[in-house]
Amino acid sequence: MKDSTVALMNKILNNNDLTYLYADLKNMVETAVIRIKNGGKIVVCGNGGSAADSTHIVGELLKGFVLPRKLTREDKEKFDNFGEDGKLIAQKLQYGIPAVALSGTESISTAVINDNGAEMVFAQQAYGLLTDKDIFIGISTSGNAQNVRLATITAKIKGAFTIALTGKDGGALKQVADLSIIVRSDETYLIQEKHLPIYHLFCMCLENEFFGA
Picture 1 (spheres, rainbow, N blue to C red):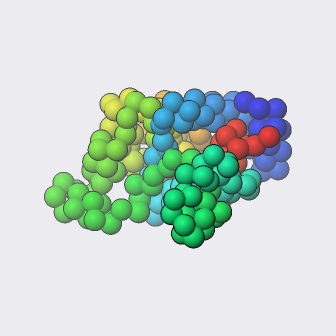
Picture 2: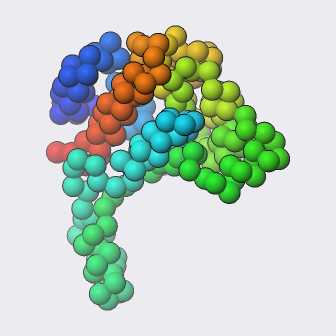
C-alpha cells in the first residue's frame, strides 16, 4: 500500500477506536487492490440496515468519494465524435471502482424468494455474477444471517475472496469467510455505527490506491 494509504488507515482507525482491526483491514484493502487490478469487482450484500450499507458502499466506489477521478485527456478524446453530448460526458464523467450490491435488485430478488425461498436470495445472484477475480463482502451484525452465509459459501465456490463484516463473535459467517472483520460489540446499533467508518475507510483506501498521488 502507498504510505498515504497507511497514514489514512491509522488516522481513521485511531479516531474510531478500531486499531485492533488494522491487520485485517490492511489485508482487505491489499487483496481488493490486487483483484481489481486483475479485472475483478466488489460484490456486497446484507439485510435491513446492512442492505443499506451495501448500497452505500457501492455508491462510494462507483464515483468520486473524497478524491477527484477526472478522465485523462486520452479517455476524454474518445467522446469527441459525439459532439456536445460527448463533450458534456467527458467533462462530467468520473472513473469508478467496479462494485455491485445484491441488496438492491427487486426483480431477481423477488423471483428467487418466490421460487426458492429467502435464504437463497443472495446465493443465486452470487452464482450468476461472481468470478475467481472478485471480492465478496457479506454484512451481518450477528454473523448469523442465513442468506448471507449461503451467499458466502457460493462466492467461495466461484473462487471469490470472501469477507465477512460482522460483530459479536462473528457467528456462522466467521466459519466460512476467508477474512472476518469483527466489531467488538454485542449491540446491533453499535455494530452498525462501527461498520460505517470501516467501510468508509475501505472505500477511501481503494480510492487513494487507484487515484491518489
